[in-house]
Image 1 (cartoon, rainbow, N blue to C red):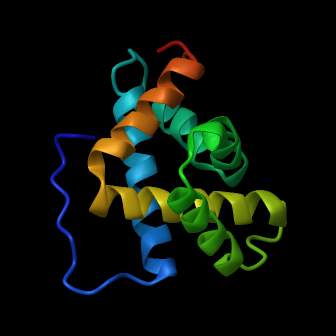
Image 2 (image 1 turned 90 degrees about the horizontal axis):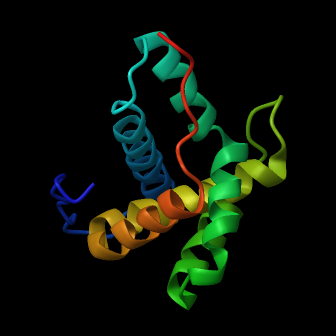
Amino acid sequence: MASVPAQVPATPLATAQLAWLGDAVWELHQRLRHCRLPARAADLHRAVVAEVQAEAQAEALRRLDPLLSELERRLVLRGRNQAGRGPRRGAPRAYGQATGFETMLGWLFLQDPRRLAELLDHLEKTEPCPPSASP
């Protein structure tokens, strides 16, 4: 993610915008992870979709929790509190945690890309990318 230059907006973004941006950051991170694997596009897509679902994001947040600073925890809480219920078929708790995770990622992307890279690297080290289906 270090190769994507962040542009800090002139005015602070609202929580919903940070979460929306963080969602894009997380999806791009997952696509970058999976594109290195030899597989068909449909298989890569399914693998990425599995990683960007609320439950997977909530799990990533759980794995990062011991490393988070007080500011990062406040960002997660801010996003979680703004989340709402989420989709009908999803678990509201996981959706809230995922929105908090995305909010933190969006803020870090804009304000502290080095820290964002540290946290994403930690996730890489603690849980390797699952292999995609064969081509």
